[in-house]
Image: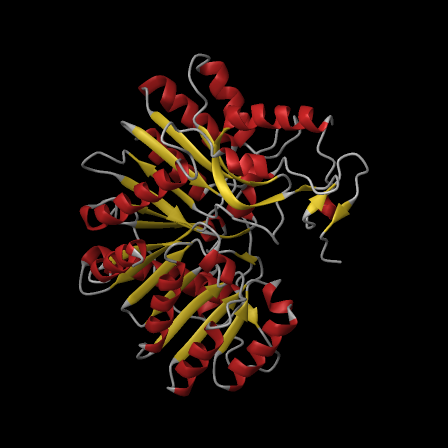
Length: 466
């Protein structure tokens, strides 16, 4: 009897009765996508969605089924995605069946699904099998049953979709909806202060010509000014309001001002900070664009006697998309154990590109309706914080030994199992690893990182995809 499987099923049965619930990949990835496809199949009038990546084989049949039932389907695609041959084929088929598909003028990194006025999904995950089965992802499901906070959030996402739709261009010449635009509703965020609020990088663009757009003119993208950082500034504002703790679970971290804000509140208010980051964030080069090493350095200066509160989801000497076990989350939990915890979650990687080079969002969840959701995010954080570590909070030696086992002089580049490693712990292990192999650096060049094994002496690689 698989008791873990039964436990997951019990969570699913309880959660799906809620107006808002969350799934986490990889353990619940299969159930998350099942929920998504069931929601698509239950649509009564409309489906609106944005896509950054699309390789999951099950999405297309459900979309076709919806169109056969005369459901209005609108999609806004990431421009690079729309250039892929398989996606071009899907676009053509869906267009012929009556779908309306547009291509974003900038990278479309938001991952939202709106169905009728009844359902919202906002997620860190793309439509891929990796997101379902391998990566650490989250899916927040919002069900509209008259709850004012959920109704408000769905309206905000509907508004965001219309902005993205109006900015986008048609996916093929001659489409009847090529000049179609939709009414843009505006919201007074101060009025919604106690509700759950969407913050999007689209707010950095000048929308003063929106009235012209409603009449059929195309919107022109233009940053309001170089200092416009709507999402970053809200994240910093929430960090500064923390009273007890801040947990960050991030895929990328490239914004120095957020690192400085974390150091400041830890110093001034004795806030407990923890940062869980992906393998890609471990970079000790002085020229590194990653801010995680900067945060580690600043923390050590400010708190020389404290342990650096960073753990890395470690799975590779040189991360490759072929062998990713991504920590793909982008969320912050503030005051997790208090009576008023706050969750900030969405598609926004902490970077200038996310703010001013593409479309991304974050939602601030801050009321009792989402308390159970926030608790589950906290459980997910702790699971990754202690992943494959023993009861003394030490790394599983078998995983580290895996990298030290060679076959005819060739050592593995990637681990089949990820593990949480403390920042200083990983630095120490790399020093030991290099000494054991008698090398000064790990000579795996960028064009070789997609291989499986390498010889540090001869610099040869094996198990390459080419």
